[in-house]
Amino acid sequence: MTPYWIFQLRLYPWIPFLVYQAKQVRKTSPKLPSQSSLLTLGQGENHILLLGESTVAGVGASAPAHTIAGNFHRLLGESFQIETIGKKGLRVKDALSLYLQHRQVQTPKSKGVILFLGANDCFLLTNPSSFKKEVEALIQQIQINTSAQWIYLAAIPPVHLFPAFSRRMQSFLQVQRNYLQAELKKIALKHPKVIYQEIPMDLQPEFFSADGVHPSDLGYQKIAELAFEKLNLKKNKP
Image (cartoon, rainbow, N blue to C red; front, side):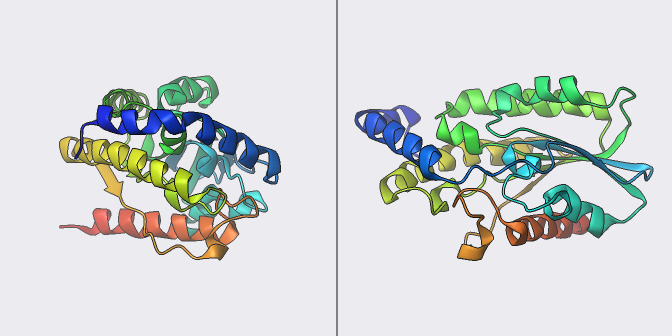
């Protein structure tokens, strides 16, 4: 992979245009509410923590039942408790402080932790080496605090496929995402409790909500089912 500084050199002349376009997308896109920023579903003894950015916060879903948390609650049943701590615009470097701020007073031991992060680190061009250190530090601290048996690390959302963005913006985001994805893969190889999963790239228009950025109800259903299948496969391995 080309050194990151070369990508930065190619990117810098385009930054004013990209900033302008990002502002236009924010200005013209529908403002969709979060449906599951801080949500607890179920009272089962098996605790699952979902932590992350707008995907966890349920931006784009029509109701809490159609968020990732709602879908996991449906798939896992009443023997599980699903807790979400999500925030639109969250970066990895701020995820631990968000967790510590909003975690349950009596922090339960978690069967597992599910992390959805990285899109905002693509948008804000986080350096890959910094990103790797921040993700590793988050995993280490979350593991200490929750005693989780496993940590599911989702691939970064396919920011280069978001319909709201121009081809030029998509091309730069794809390269930035590739650099950060490479770091996630290294982390997964290094940590035996981390379960990493890629995201299929054959996304249909109905996967996205009205703003062309966040998932729709169908999109959240697909994401949850994909993760659920992966976790079952992990659990059932001999």
